[in-house]
Image 1 (cartoon, rainbow, N blue to C red):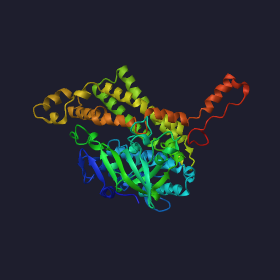
Image 2: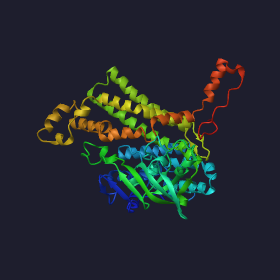
Image 3: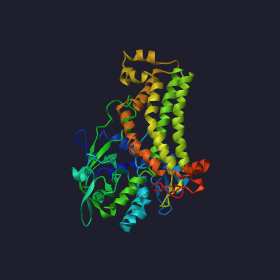
Image 4: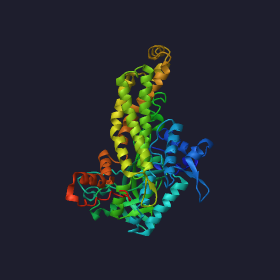
Length: 495
């Protein structure tokens, strides 16, 4: 049954080992570095219980009669995808900001492996049963699920065996109960999540000597031997009035250390099987791309809103050059929206019987959203002007001596100085703060780097259609049939 926010908080009081800024954390639910984002995740659980939002955030499972989360529901219809999209927007509207790693965007990685059950069956039918069990468990029990993906990697010119073998997570032993793994993974939100789908990052599995690294499993984030070593937080560095985003939506990144952690067999999805590892690397973002790109859409909304509001307040939106720049932001926003919507409308049935968004449209939408993001952020800075970096903080506005001068010179007609201060505090935290820079960097690698996004487009686009048009229109091959196009990775009938 879907949990409440308090039940989620209680699930984190499980003895997990967490460090941040040189301190060992006793309780992530109350520590100032984690409390704001834990509260945000707890709020998502509570929204599924409150009458105004219950039917948006949850549904009644036909088999159990219990309420289950929309986010973790297996997608079978277009309506399922639109419901997921609405649920995410509802969360953003309730919280007043964007949360990226909260579970709905990572559970889809397990759906990708669910589509690969024929590959898992090459090893053992038990592995197919394991992924089916955990997919349906996540859909009903609603654990906070994250992804364990990126390794430290070490010297990439060498195999892991030719350096410290632990630079990539790998299996080091078997027991009657399961496998023992060692290594490390970087993952946002792991320190306050319940479980992680851990899988390899190697792209080329041509060497079977790497098979100990070809392992995928579900890990309990409080299991013995797991340690969470976190980056320094942004929350708490200033007042909420000056940092309305940093203090509420900092999603803390973690290096998860697996210090000889035993993974029960029932939580192992594949082991020493390079084909399964290659499959999951090729199809990992088949579903999780959608909520990832949707977050870009909401961020684009904020860019448009900040730029337009400032232009309206200052009276410069009548200038053609300003309107053209605002239109550029709108084109960025609407292009993301178009890719998301079209990917649903042209969705395809997956090998596992799920409805996956149109892969070519979704992959190209991800490239568009990610590659243009830095330029769109800078364009918004340009439209905000110099006040973005020179406006004093809230404490100075409240000062009895300095405050009156700020209120005098920053008010614009009927728009008082407090509205101007709030706008620029929000804009600065969105565009110029440490949090803003971190978020931009994160978006550029969160689902692999940009060059890998382009390779994914290549691997999932059907070149046969355009090639055939040119063959026919140009009269190539003297009327002979073109060679059969290579099947895009993990594709279905259309591809």
